[in-house]
Image 1: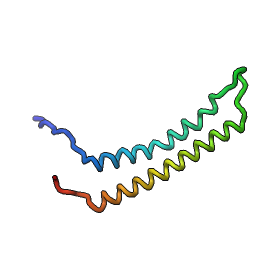
Image 2: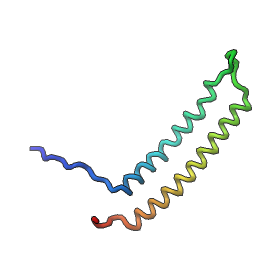
Image 3: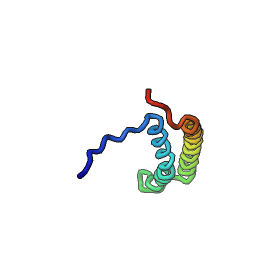
Image 4: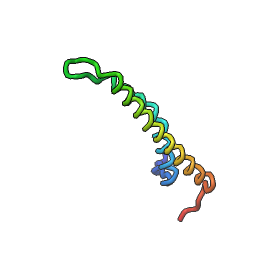
Length: 92
């Protein structure tokens, strides 16, 4: 006989921490997709875009991804610290 399973309840704090961790794991794929965009660029006559524009785009994407990774790292470290210091809070 099968028992009815109750809905899974996750604390709001741990749920957000897991979603932040998922976002951090997806960043390399986001970076790869954004870096591939210059391969699709063309001018009006079908000529490729200048290398200088493509390099500016690539380095700006790199800079934004590095800043985003730093912010996520700091945020995740703070959230993980608070999770470790108070792992099982009683029901309120």
